[in-house]
Amino acid sequence: MISPPRIAPSILAADLARLGEEVQRVEPFVDLLHIDVMDGHFVPNITFGIPVIASLRKVTSLPFDCHLMMTNPDAYFEPFRTAGADLVTVHAEVYPDPREVAAAARAHGLQFGLALNPPTPFVAVEPYVELCDLLLVMSVHPGFGAQTFIESTLDKVAEARKFIDSRGLPTDIEIDGGIGPDNVARVRAAGVDVFVAGNAVFGAPDPVSAVEAMRHALETQREP
Ligand code: DX5
Ligand code: ZN
Image: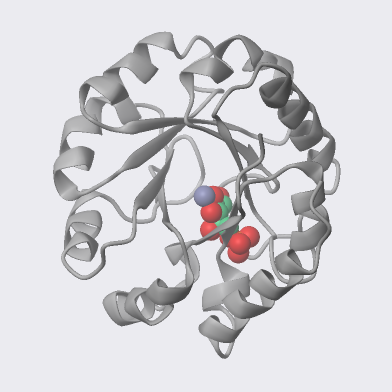
């Protein structure tokens, strides 16, 4: 069943020179912190890694939702956990059969998520949803913030929602890319539990107002 909506600001869009302050400013208003780790191989961009996560762990108690856009994330599960990660999401394109990587994450005390790029169909992960705490539906091509939301990904969300509910699984559906106050309500209607927002929050003149605008849009949305 769908859970109450949760908001996960993505630090990719934050002022990285003032990262601690940026996170602490929104902390009372959000549910998770989305941390985009990019390796320059799986995606054509490089962001931040374990030392940044460890530094952030000292300044916030938000759960860390680590989106690992990497070709070999499992090699780093132990340092991710030690640094303070709570959940690691790896890509289905990297692990067509994710059973071993899911077990490895759990063995390190991490929750496990599986992400799908826009071209990857839901059927590719269907046999493995029951292994996942989180299914991340990418609504932009991964690698960069502030891209335009791809509408057709909502069909994938609806398909995933139907599958999860029909089997009574506890797996959350997360959406990532191009999310903000203007589209969050209809994305919720498709069946999303967790909303990642980078540019819409940290790119706004007032990040707290931006989160509140998302919350307001979600509250006035009739539940699916
Ligand atoms: C993109 C990242 C996203 C990104 C979203 O590869 O996975 O988490 O930060 O940024 P916005 O919300 O700006 O589209
Ligand atoms: Zn992300």
